Image (cartoon, rainbow, N blue to C red; front, side, top):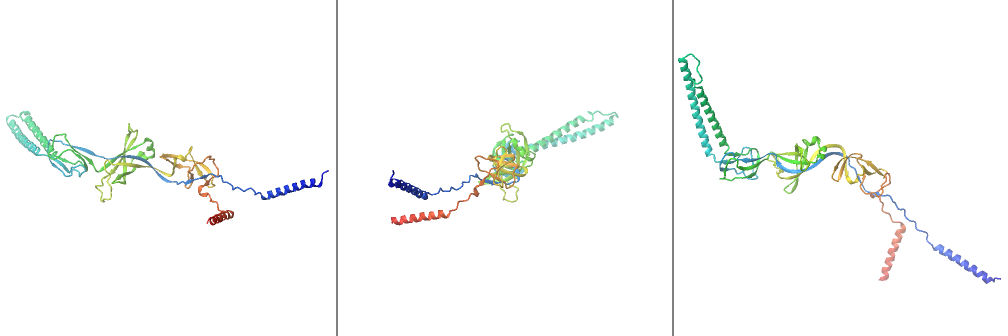
Length: 407
């Protein structure tokens, strides 16, 4: 039979265990509440701008004169005179004297031809008089019709032919005398000069080369698939030229004058020819114009078709003819677009987008049409709670106490 001691001791041990369990339970901290994490994808957007747009076709070319001529001697002789303007880079006017070939022999030839013509005319007049005398004498002898020989008509025709030959000789001598003067065929710039004072030239010798300054041309290569963006294949289109003058980027205006009408067999390009009037600004009343020099390399933008409403967006954002937009409810929306032109890294869109649409320009991992999105600018920086402030102050106090203890 158990004693009281054997009964009481287990009861006390059990009571002590229950009390210890209750004490430990009261010391246990409740689990901390975790903040809710927002997993909404964050995107970056750009506003779409829809406005009237002019199609532009880029090209390039070298500035050349529309007219250029090689000066060639048409007579033989010594160069006895040179104009001071007849130097490379010199500007001359139409009919301005550039050089003179010794005209002495040609003056003598002209005088000789004139003398021959005077002799022929005198012989002709004599023959005419003799013919009239022969006709009068024939009528005195007989009433029959005279023959041509009796009237000296063959001799008259021969003298008339000699007069015409003499006239041709005079004209030839006058023309050769004129050709001793080398004159500019048009307003021009001297490209080069191949003779000097005292040089002897013969017929066909090249004297120099001149380039007309009235009009400059630029041959602009255009890919065949770009002609669709030009009105009437570029006829009379305005061209903006950009080049460098004195180290500064400069612009000029030109007009498409014509197309060459063929495709180059080497580059497979069509060529349009742009013209610039008075490229050296020689006829300009002001000195503000910048000359467009022959030989300059220029980039060109040919003005083409007008599009009433269009926008330009990056090419990489287009997938299967659609782009991702952020709608007014901050949801993903795919819009089908009509691309009318690819232009470098961008595409030109004629329809499917409205002014002010939010175009998503950042990448999405798993995009689903209609999914909820957030803008980067909508993120809110968390504010500090009173408990965080107390903890921070307590930490600062602890640091301060430690510092004092170290002192």
